[in-house]
Image: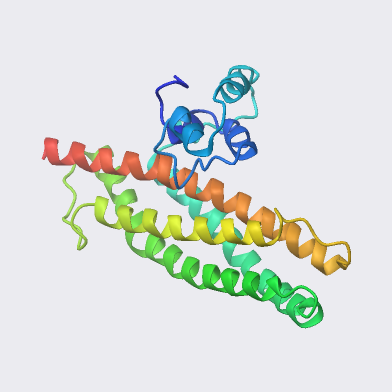
Length: 241
């Protein structure tokens, strides 16, 4: 890892613990991972040295680090689907129910709740479509490439042309959802419940924060590991066959 020249997404791909450091300084490591630390700090008016120091001082050889960067692409695609896609599917209806209740009970004194609910409903609808496109189109093609590589066979031409086409679409949709959740974070004062918040209010804000954290990791695994390696694997096929 070279913190001076590597892109942020590459740094987090090598050691996911660095994600917490970037999050602390409000630096997007998933949707905007294609920047160096210096470039990201310059855009936010931050000093780079504390970030360099924090990364440098991370404990070495942490046994609890999952090295997603070394995983086979078919395994990583399965992990994203069975872990992060399922998380979205399970938490979305619960959050929508809670937000609906908050709007009815607290909307008069906290009108920002209506915009939060509108943003989350849009996120829920678009993520459901987004994940289906991955599950039915992109992920199967990536898994087929892995199988073909192992058996030394050619891959059939997919209907979408190069894998870069759906990848670019997915990354664009990731950016949209990242911006939506950034607005929700702003409207909730970084998920801080107001003084008159009931238990449902507090639980909802905590769940929204967990949802954002999970989506950041979800997008990171795709944008910074799965997608670049899928593009590279397809290029190897074009050279070999």
